[in-house]
Length: 250
Ligand code: SAM
Image (tube, rainbow, N blue to C red; front, side, top):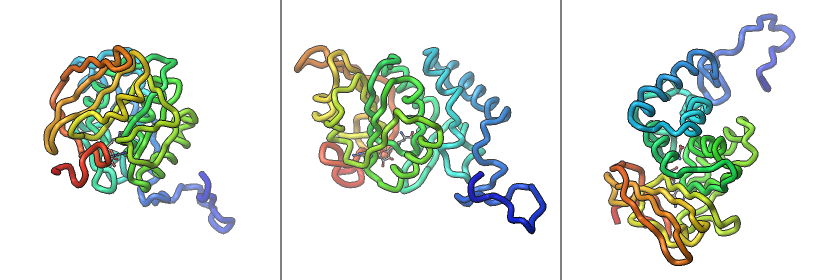
């Protein structure tokens, strides 16, 4: 591991206990049997049992090490059945909701996908397993930088992190076959609808702070869209020009 080479006077090959991010080496990046087993249980008990059974989605969730996308101090809770706080007051979503949204997007291997709300980078890594190219947009630079580093280490060169107000989408690389918004807004931003490819799908939480409904939109024509209401959810606010202006309450 870079930066952890023992100096010549130190004959011990035992790894240092503290990792560069302040975590404990012994519980860092541990894609080992224990974590594979925990991921397997997460998939069986939290996803498949509740109806998330799309073969590609569950394979991706078995494969991507969720434990690498949560803060070091919370790694042991990475597979718990709820959202976890990451940094800057933001969250990594509950595994079931992540799987549910991915299933609702019906992503095909050749698809180009836009995610709004990079957060930890976990969902972007899963999208990277499912799609040909992923653009993920985050408004908080500190989160974007940490996620980009995790995705780089995971070798996901086709997943690109951008820092911007994602309520405007990312016009430079539109259109997208699928768009997923992982923060709750007052309605679906018009810019995102315009950036959907023909037959493209968008999934996003819509509603006030504290409780939203997941909405799925499909572009059926130049100016026509089909809209369906899915399950109730609770996400952090989508803040920006076509979202909430402040903390999600105005
Ligand atoms: N997908 C993330 C993951 O896998 O960790 C979880 C995302 S977290 C629930 C929501 C994220 O949306 C936060 O990181 C927040 O900063 C971001 N966000 C809120 N408004 C945004 C906007 N207008 N543009 C881009 N990101 C935004």
